[in-house]
Amino acid sequence: MVDSLKISVVGHTNTGKTSLLRTLTRDARFGEVSGRPGTTRHVEVARLNVQGQTLLELYDTPGIEDAIDLLDLLDQQSAQVEQRVAAREDGPTRIERFLQSAPAAERFEQEAKVLRQMLRSHAALYVIDARDPVLSKHRDELEILNMCGVPLLPLLNFVAGQKTNETEWREMLAGLGLHAIVRFDSVAPARDGEKTLYTKLASLLDAHGATLQRLIRSHEADAQQRHTAALDLIAMLLVETAALKLRISRDEQSLQRGIERLNQAVREHEQSCVAQLLSLHRFYPDDIDADGLPLVDGRWEQDLFDPYTLQNMGIQLGSGAAAGAAAGLGIDLMVGGMTLGAAAATGALLGGGFQTLRHYGSDLMARVTGEKTLRVDDSILNALATRQVDLLAALERRGHAAQQKLALARLSDIGGGSREPLFVHNELPESLRRARSQSGWARDSDAVMGSSGKHQAVQQLSKNLQDLLASRYRDEPDQR
Image (cartoon, rainbow, N blue to C red; front, side, top):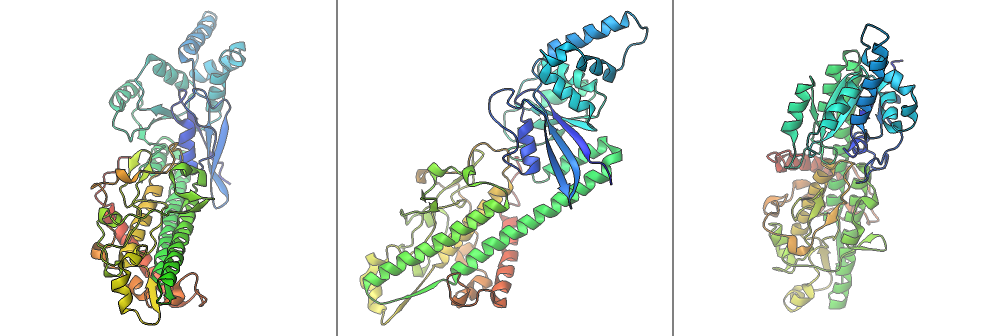
């Protein structure tokens, strides 16, 4: 069995080392992250497994706090030795001597933990907050770390923002002979961020290239499976919602009760889908700003409906919506401080467009004899699909180190910057049109739910959503 590759994650305090490991492990609960310096006080390990075998061990280390004085101490210790021997000592010998000295257990206890782990590792990632200015203490840190004699790969963190000192950092690193550098934003990682990181590591560790390539292939396969599963969840939501039908009596009281029942059914459908999408991407309920969401007793709930919302999303109101009576709540999803537009949302469900039909009852009820069938309007299905697809895109772009919770913006924040709706002119895919006539496909139906026709419709719609999603974000610049 091949031994696992051991990588130390090192750097100055508060540069995002623990945040990096959270994103690489897809575990938002790994370690402790805060704005306080020196949050990590002990070495912690995260293991990445493939088919039950640990391929990579990532060691989160405390921040280096006093590199300037430590380098002075190392020089003093070497000077004392060089008075007795002719040859200058190599780096690892100097580090070993320091680790056996009293200062390593006292004043420089945290730095000693870092260096001890460095000597046990095959390589190290030197994490840099690219927003920080380049200071002399950083050069001293790198000089000390280089003494350990293991390959060092500088990692520029927090590069998604506009205000960074990346150029200055690259110039300083090049002056120290460190030309292999990787950009990786732990809060908003690029689509190929992990692949790029592990490929750069492989270039420094020839003997472990096969291990890292295996890890890359495994992560790519996992991401594809997760993406496909998410699209299947959204497709199932839309097919079951399209199949929803409710027969009611002609009187207005029955109509109102039917409206409420249909709205609640749509709410529950979307609530379930959102919960499954979060779980699939290994996010937790408290990753969402509960105060900013329409939650009642832990359930998605929304009683405000705005007839202009669909118009803000660029969605035309269907005839079934009674010429403007369709209503929904338009909301923005905020991810890492970036708005995704009114189409992206994770709550406040659209309920079918029948909420205000009672205001048009005199015209509509005249045409009704016997029973009436209520169903979700095409425009509502369009809005539902748009929101879920944009939510998926947001989750796939969100690093597990993100500290800002998924939150909903105010209605007043909705403007002309929102994206176009997913289905142009409310033209639903064939699979959804077919679901209209299949009431047995609705989740709350007494009919058999596992029909082959429903399965085929879900699979076909999932493929349609994949094409639409790819087109929707094809031209979006990757700022992560």
